[in-house]
Image (cartoon, rainbow, N blue to C red; front, side, top):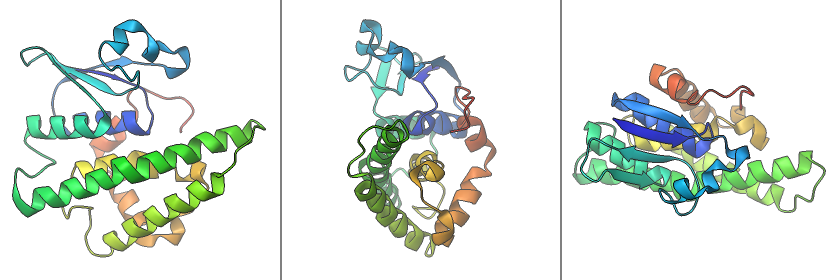
Length: 209
């Protein structure tokens, strides 16, 4: 059994969607971040950075503890034998788009979300437009890619799983996907997958974000 320590954030949903798509058995430990549970000593022993998600695979000797959402996606895919080609050009294609998400889209979108909350709270929010413009640039790259292929690596993969939860929050980013028609089509296509629907609600979130 895999234990998932997570909350329904962009990075947290990456892990839950991957687990739902993989078919692997897992148990959820909700980590309500506002309580700062992720900074408690027991959790820091799992991830010294004190961030979710984390998985603990108790089926393996050790057990195996994995943090960082990109590493979790790779671990789950390789354990399940799906969502990531095993070798060659197809694997390289998947990994380059995966890291495009984990080093680009996720961090830039996270900055927009943070600054938008600061703005809404009446606090300073310098550079919000700068980060939003960078997200728009990244969405433009994805839009062009989806003019070439239905999914980032050609077939549905962990690269798409890494992208979807952040694109899902485009309203909070102040970005209209109508300006990115191929990305919008991909967004609808991925969002219609039953496992994605389930994973987006792990653990359940009441505010719809």
